Amino acid sequence: MLNIRRMNDHEDYELEIYLMRHGQTQFNVEGRIQGWCDSPLTDAGRLEVAKAGKRVADLKIKFDAAFSSTLHRTVETAHLMLYCAGQSDLPVTQLEDLREYHFGGFEGELSDELHQVVAETRGFASKEEWLEAYRHASYNIFVETVARLDPNETAENEADFLARLRCGLFQAIAESPQDRNARVLIVSHGMSITALLKSIDPTCTLYKSVPNACIVRLRYTMSKGLELISIGDQGLLTSKDRPKKQPITNVAKGLGYRR
Image 1: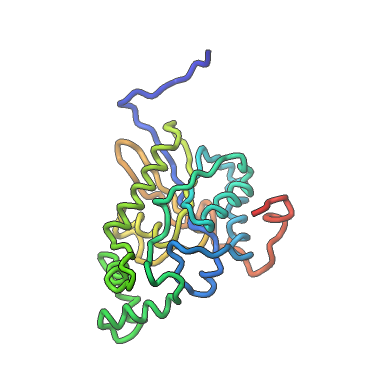
Image 2: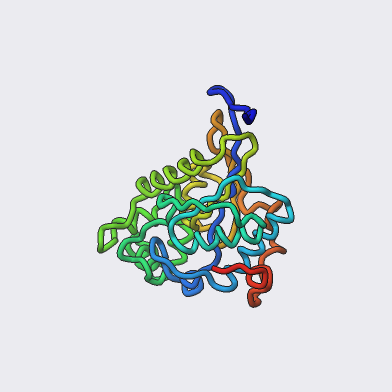
């Protein structure tokens, strides 16, 4: 019989969360709103994810669980990340609540055009003036305005968006090993990650999506809850590791990875 040490109800544990945005997609290149619709990763997007996975392998970071949203761009990112990190045998659990903000009837439209409409609705002289105000706002005025303007009346408001995301995050935490120093990979979306960060520390970032393939590190303990360790972790993926414009190399394809 195996001798397994079990934690009692009063013993704390620490979970290190690697919260990652998906790689660059075709809609990202075109400047289109994705939300719950989807578009494939570009070659550049796959390469930047592969480089992040290789960096994880070099640092000997071992994940104990992996999660993504149900949208294909995060599913592919998670599998490619794990493959290049030498951990392709780790299953990826897909959670609907980790999906991106739902833009309702604006999905697939050009982002610049929507921001122009929002700027005019809010009374700003230009889109640039609006974006500056939005980035530094005390709440997500963009999301609230989109929810109000959506012709389909299905776009999420900020409260519903954040509540859903936190449900997804805490479901991932609950389904992760409750061992000391466990590590978990969670692949989500730009606006989703920013919303989660703002809920932990409102001053830690502006209302602007983190870059594609960026990794945010969080710590969860039962005693302190969620804490931010770093955004765009310089110890994990530095600027010099960011991919240049080039075709996918053997780091993603020649080693046998199939998307």
